[in-house]
Image (cartoon, rainbow, N blue to C red; front, side, top):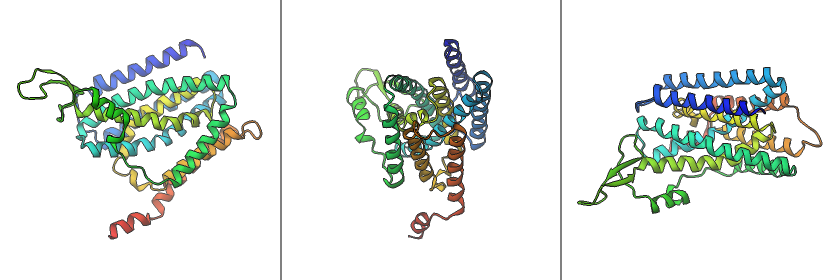
Length: 315
């Protein structure tokens, strides 16, 4: 890819993020469902428009690969939403502060995923056999997602959180949307910069995103090997994640079959990688399968009552 494409795309994203935080969301506030729907429409429209531009510049095949990568990453990001809900609930983060945490969390995620995508592309170029390792890992992850049970959020067991608390002085009080404040930690003590609980939440969001990226980035390499398409589809999916959270936070629990749909998607992409030299699966088929599985799992969740939830309500 021309260097100008990489530079231009990253400049575009920086401008969009600056407008988001510096203009449209300069003041901390509770994001309404209507506002979140509007921003979701904006990010999805931008992704669709960028895909059309890819089609014009690189051809139909590249466009379908971009859309497939975007759909896979957007779907796998649903797991991140569950974590956000649990983390914000655990730390009792006020609704008006959640947007700011997600903004900086997603900005950090873009930087870390960019590095991970670059490393993945280099490894695949130098050691082609890694594609089979990725494929086997995705099938294992899909199986674990379907049958491994639910995981609990335990911030005190997170090694990064423990490291931060060990070396960074912290206050126990929130100070609006600030991550650091000047405060005396003991009566009569000198003022110094200390971290607020909001920083702990941000660090937890960042570290859990790295864990999810270990699954999602190999999955995108399963639908396209082009680093530019992997990176741009990943970025657009992550940018839309924040607004999606505010849309789905109160209803995501209803889609109880979605995790099985996601596990099927991971297993399918893993199998596609393992069979890439024997029985290549076209990108059009891949896109259709992923979309059908995800839509089907959502519709079935709405049509078939959740017996576990019903039993729990009954008790």
